[in-house]
Amino acid sequence: MLVAFLMSESGVKPVTLTEKQKRFCDEYLIDLNATQAAIRAGYSGKNARNIASENLAKPNIKKYIEDRMAQKATKLIADQDEVLKYLTGVMRNEESEEVVIVEGTGDGCSEARVIKKDASIKDRVKAAELLGKRYSLFTDKVDLNADMDLKITVDYGEDEND
Image 1 (cartoon, rainbow, N blue to C red):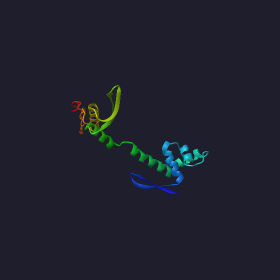
Image 2 (image 1 turned 120 degrees about the vertical axis):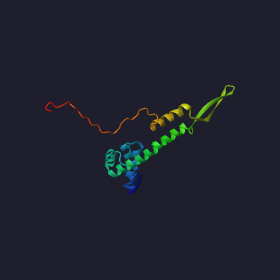
Image 3 (image 1 turned 90 degrees about the horizontal axis):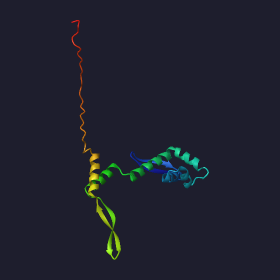
Image 4 (image 1 turned 180 degrees about the horizontal axis):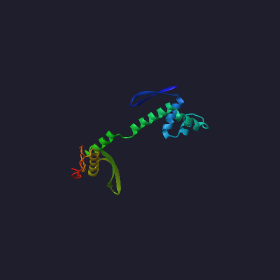
């Protein structure tokens, strides 16, 4: 019996899996093909499909896979702060890229070299524009909403009986 500890937003939680189940989960996370994951984890080829289906239905395996996928997502996908820092760096010309340039050396020969190139004015303006949109700096729309009570009185004239 294997106890895996997973980090989640609510802290560290133990998930109990057998070694084979953990191997199945890790293989499943590679290509999300449950049948192939079962075969690669060491289950019988003729029963792999059924075992894979059963494994994916087990709450402890399901939890382990969900937690691992969440961990991968936070590592692989840029979050809001990372994107904003990058855009700010481009706008302030703190980011550069490496480009290959080819120069002639004479006699029909040329050589290539790598240089660092700063962001162009166009790229810096685009980064500033994206940041401005994010922080609503260029809003032309004026919000004219106000909380007020409205009382409407309809006067139909004088009553004929009076």
